[in-house]
Length: 65
Image (tube, rainbow, N blue to C red; front, side, top):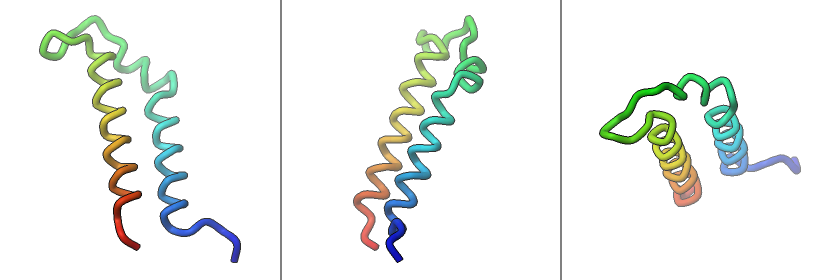
């Protein structure tokens, strides 16, 4: 019917998840003067959230339909 296939819908959902994860209100929660294993919490959050997004995109792209 001219719409997105399931893979396209999942990628759009992941894009929206990325926008939500890196929006100001969520980032403000992690902007605290503390560290995790010597790394500031905000930086650790950036690396973990970005890695999770990359992993989820890879999972969606590589998964056979």
